[in-house]
Amino acid sequence: MPIEPLNVLLYDIYSSDLFLVTQDWTMETFFSAIFVLCLSYVSNTPITQDIKLDIVNLHNTLRRHFAHGQMKEGLVVANMKQLVWSTTLEQRARTTIRLNCSLSFLNVASYHKFTNVAWDSYGNFSFDILNWYNEIRRYSVNDNACFPIGSCPHAITMLNATQGHIGCAYRRDCIRGRGAFICIYDNNNNNDTDLLWDPLREFLKQGPLCSQCSTPTSFCDDGLCTSCDIRSENCDCRKTCSAPGIGSGTLNSTACSCTCQYGAGLNCDQQCVDTSATDFYYYDICSTMTQEECEYFPEVRQGCAKTCGVCRTAPEA
Image (cartoon, rainbow, N blue to C red; front, side):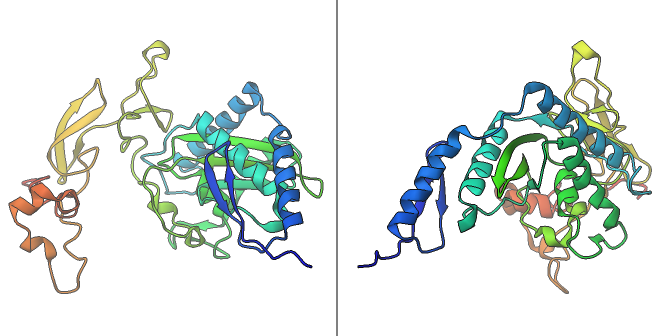
């Protein structure tokens, strides 16, 4: 008698992640997959400390190159973070590549949008990373899109200005003899915008280099936001806390942070406005907010900053 198909839920004890296999398995297929999965725990190709440093340095070089506007004229990034290696992301990358290579015939795992994968990788990681970055040539600043549409997802991922950590993994023999190189980046803004639409400007702020760096990476290392390292004298603060006709404030040079008297933003160079005022056609929602609502709801203070007194308009504005 044939064995009834199974819908299987795999639990990866190494990463404590759950993976739902959306394909019917026979019992023989299930146990074969478990056997392959167990073997894969020892078949990842390790990345040495020196290579990890090379991966991080190349990413930062390319992010710095882009932040300076050297790839797209007129686009200078004010909040591009410096990447550092994360063992947590490295472990997640190893788990992801292990499952996808071992169970590739079942299409087990889908990738997180802040993940880059290079199939057919021969272990030349610099080549793979440069291929990702070169996709940005297809990006139009004016149109905020890549042409053809959706043709630069790797570049969009690695140039996300808000990311501060990276972890990668490599498998020499992944699918039909092909190698696979994967990098996962952190993202703190939890933006769910589909990468198909190339939302690069959702992840960066334009303006003078490092003028929009946030704590704790509020200092500058040649265009990249970083923490202050007194030992290396890397404590370059680029904030001015001033923009004529828009805002002004006081600079705390120790923390490289601004206390704005007028204006808004990390450098007091943004207009003090109610950003939620135009969320509804012909209706200013901020005009109905009370002080109690401003104090109780953080999203109200953020969207109705002027009404709630979070910021003030400059007298000359």
